[in-house]
Length: 292
Image 1: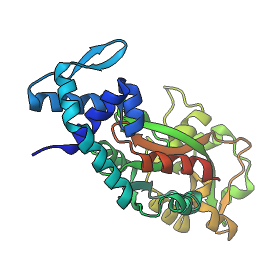
Image 2: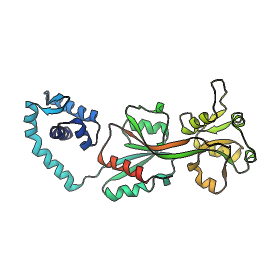
Image 3: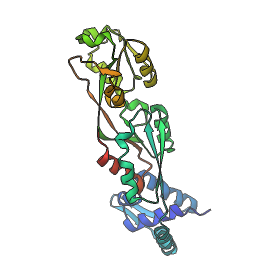
Image 4: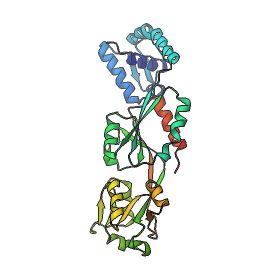
């Protein structure tokens, strides 16, 4: 079966005589462009380009093929424009990320992409990175996590802003009237998210644990922390923006410990092998319209 996408990519590389320029036009990575060209050459069992440090130049076989397909590809591209074929964007959102942070960006996207669709998937960190690597989602909107969670050669992060990890107690807590030092906090069991989370990493840094110290931290999920805060007098470290309604109603309180935890970055993760115009536009809109 003829792969029209390969011929379209071949034509654009031939027109530009440069892989980098072609990848920018196609909104896919340079390795992906190279792979498509190699696949086409393998299928035809011929070489199509003279490759050099100056770019990509058609050889005699490439020139013959270009003359055969050029007009047909141009007609197909015009047909695409006429019917304004829409593109779906699969956007992964971390389950705890407050929707108000990204809500304003979605209508902005639709203003210029009326025929596109954004499918929103609520995901945990683990399955978010798995789906990104398998290209089941196009981008993920999330806090930044440890690089150990993903293939850093394929999955990249674009910072958009910062969130604030804080010490949290319930409104009847004994700790509210105490001035806790870092040593006091070290001797108190603190509940926070998993070890790859920014909350855990920031807590470890702030309390200045040494290799000899026993780390008195319990790692549980966000829902479990909220349940524990209802029934027990515990100290937790959670991102403040996740709890705004509970803080406004005084159901939960921020504990003043005399110092601030480092801010946590949030932004967009994407797979470098998966780029197209709508995706690039959505990333830009998220960068311009997400505020904390």
